[in-house]
View 1 (cartoon, one colour):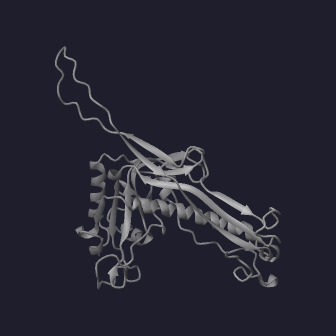
View 2: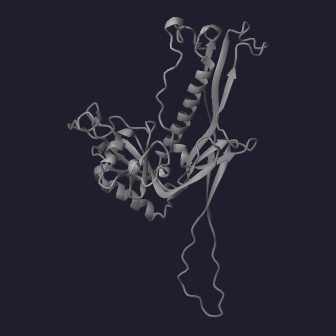
View 3: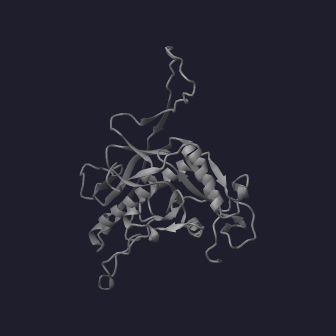
Length: 338
């Protein structure tokens, strides 16, 4: 058992201590905003089924007068997703709680809450990265050959790919911290990228930064950087990258690891491309606090010397229609060189 004592959380010198705690640097949580959010009721098992009714063939054969045509058949596609349990906790000594001038429990609850949100966002990204529609920048055959930054041609191909599959544009977004309520937005495909790539996207001809939107209310989220044609882009440091997974390069204008280009995914999708499943009707994260003066029958801590703070969440994400999800894999400009 790891116990956080005054070694990890030292007691500050009171006369020199500033009570205002430093603000933590937090990544922006965006992936869960755009999935088809569905709650799984408690006591209903751990698996949920998404069902899609497939399009019917077009009826182009003229009907004959007085003749009843042969009827058709409908079909559905079922996709199941199983909830997984995620969680984390900290153990705090009673000395820290009793003697520190920090509001330790309050602060650590916030830290754990942030960790929980970031964890579930990253879980969602990892699912989206399993999509099979991939465009490699520069027209190369695979990730190991990538060395070029993203171009307008890459984005045009992504838009064309989605439109060919009749991917609908997103018209509503899940509100933060309000369960499954949504609010409307102007129709668009959504693109999510790492800030390293956002800089290159913002330099493309025709890119419209959020500062030039007609109305401030048009901005989806503080993570939104702007729009290019049919795509609205948001950035997050949680978007994974593959360090040194690209081609060998000598060009120092491209970010690289051990002489090979770092490869970044740009995830572009339409409505209902993926789903996010939570247990319960609203908040999918449980914060659990057990103080050192709690259960006197806990024989693992007979002197009540420890408190625990933690969180757990049942959650999963699943791709619902792979045809409505495109991933561009590209390199990124080295901002220190250009």
